[in-house]
Image 1 (cartoon, rainbow, N blue to C red):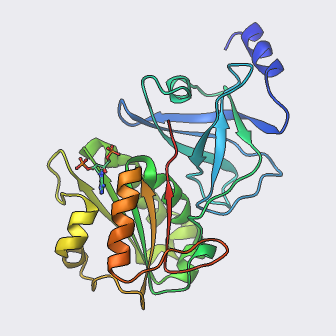
Image 2: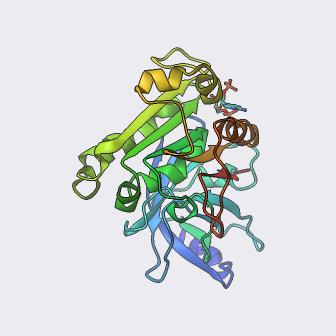
Length: 268
Ligand code: A2P
């Protein structure tokens, strides 16, 4: 960014938000990228929560909810984003580079947190597309493995290339010194719907047919042993919620923990 542009951006930073510096950007496909940025020393959050993100490119910046993809112990913050051609935020956000400024409102929130679930044996994290982001945070948090013996994260995308982020993160968790020793019970079940891959189909169909349970060698979901979190598009949330209710699970919240919780990736 040129010096006068940088100065102009700084004068546009509103009060009540953090202005952080981008430290890394990685593009996965023409629709998906991730970025990391500095973390304010005073900023605390629970793994799985989201924040409002914006850019200092207008007098009234546009903010969108973004799940924090890094765990609560990480010294930086990571986000995983879709690129929308005419998305008011993402059309600009997808062009950010190392050293650029990103705005973040100060209060994190969300229901995809360990506190909103009753203890159980097996945790299911159901995601489609960028809905994997909050689970990228939770599967890197040792607390998740203190609470659950087994953690199964499902990620469904249209095409194989869109699964790279979740595959990279799960592989990194397994090799990580801090998480690796806890994360023995972590498994990724990745499926595609519009390109051939080893496992194919919507997770809702794979639960209905029982194929996902056969593939993983686990019993069908039951309220005695299983807990769930769901993150994806509105339709995916609705259908996956109905599937979990069909297995006898009940939706919970921060104030009333129960056997599953729901959230959507609120981007553009
Ligand atoms: P499909 O290709 O059959 O639509 P999107 O990019 O549209 O958000 O979709 C991401 C993934 O989520 C796709 O693989 C898509 O499958 C799947 N999906 C879309 N709607 C649902 C739903 N209602 N239930 C389960 N999976 C869904």
